[in-house]
Image (tube, rainbow, N blue to C red; front, side):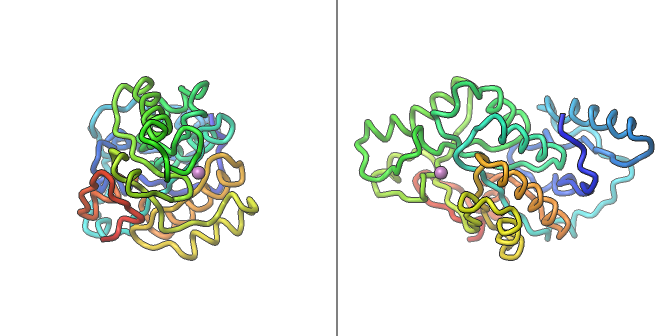
Length: 275
Ligand code: NI
């Protein structure tokens, strides 16, 4: 159970209608905060989680009080938050708690060697509407590899994910953002890079990371972060709250491209959701 953040006010809920790829699981759950005694908030939070987590059901209920703001919301800037190098139990689990509170879907590019032992985290990512991709097995450059070695890095990680989840496409983010012609040919999925990189691994300075994103982000951006570090989780939470406050919507990379009319193709590199 995540701790309640007293400063937390906004959620991604108003952005639900722009989600295009099966993220209906976020729909129909309205989490109400700060209404009465503290125990009421806790009860509501528990109810929200019970509703939000297993929801493979399509949208069923809209809050009666929800205003029809579709025209305004259509113009909202939309970004995708992405996390590489996980999963890591201590940090990724907390990040998932915080994203769930805000109903924010993200995209996780996982390292195969970190998956054994963290299967529950992977299942939770999928159940909570996050997109899951591959970041190789051992965090190696995918350039200059033999076909066999490429498959040991990318195919093997996909197989692990398939074993756990049963289905999925698992798009590729190559470590360091580097590919060559062979890797692009063998990728067997779209290749996702990024347009905003706060270099969160560098000094793990939360204030600098937050400013680096919030001051530079634009509609359609793909933001690169790493869920290996507690400081990155702290920064991601502040970034989400700041951007929700500025009217941004968060979607997965897949939804970002689809929303902007981009038909993602295997072997093609996507740095943002802009055409
Ligand atoms: Ni990486």
